[in-house]
Length: 315
Length: 225
Image (cartoon, each protein chain N blue to C red):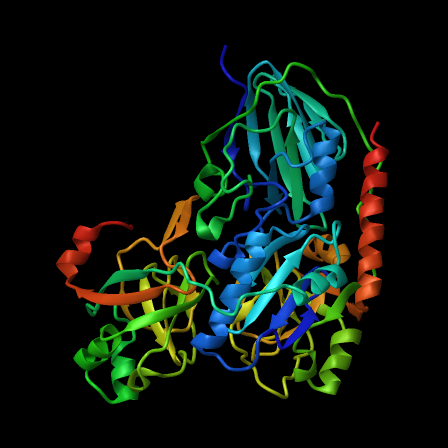
């Protein structure tokens, strides 16, 4: 009997294996990586009844077109995603996110696009037959590490699935909500910037530019004026850190960011709002609001509780 | 030892060891880094040492800024430790094909190419930190004569293996990457190994020495594409 597998008929723009990320390697220059939208990642694995930290395929904008070979498998897609299943007899099923589907031999899964968002997740019952690198299934393309030789999924390749015996039928009522503000904590160089610029930073709209990928998100809007110095001694960075280079356009570090940087840090996105910020596609307007550490810690507790509540609603 | 501790966002500790960048300060950072790693403190997920800072990332679900700060402030870090460092010898080809900015350095420094190369290979360097891209070593201090600023306009793509200099530092681009350092040569040596037991050839605290190889020797090395 041949193994369950997907043949990649179209890879999508940026499709990679991801899990919860890779710890403890900042000092060699490897960022956490991992699924950008942690909540949607966790929901995907819960819906398909996989382990919490099993690998998923993360896609951005346009997703992959996959042809299934094998007996049958169950899949789920999370995020805001337009997709369809093309059955072997050419009939089409319009896909709904947060609902499991069974695929039979020669069915195709066409993940057309993410809608008003960037990232979506495909989880398959039993997971993929891939290897961990340094305790994680996450792919860091820039360092060429992780499953699939550290590469994005490519056209024509075969993705082997772990064998499963039972079909899954689960669903969840869930809508990805937007928030009015992206909340931030003052950065370690907050006082480098002019009073007017701080006012702009916390009151005006910033637009997500096209220079955005898993490494970082470049924003445009009012120029942030630095009064002190535009370069600092290179030091560590983390996801959510907002740096402002000499040109005055802020850059938010995302999960695949360079681990060391020398631009002043104006602010850091709070952990509770990271998923929502990273899901903003180019052209979307965002507003920042400063909160203190205690508020941020409480907001994260709420985020964790909400995620658990959502997962508990799976039927 | 640590001058100040701040929070960097809600899930990281930003430890400041003072403004000066020198070997002495950096060794303190590396000592703290090694000690905290060995102690396996609950909730700590990642530690990023740099010239004069140490950033400690923790899992906000398991712990908090206050808890980790208390632990770090009360650590008993020995001021001197027998360092487990090594000397790494790196071959570099300075052929015109690789030395993209050697002419610029020649003009700015007012010395010949040969002299620049001799200045670079004449001494050992200290590895302050690794990162930005996987395995990239930040080495120093280079001789005063060859110190200069970054390029006015950074390159979009610096070739893999490029050896660059700026200010008091030199480095090796372990992967193709954007960058603004002055490129004066290229090394065929694989620095980021991808071997999980030994990911990088050069670790913080190590000593590095460059030696010149010809273009023919470079091709023979054939360790990278």
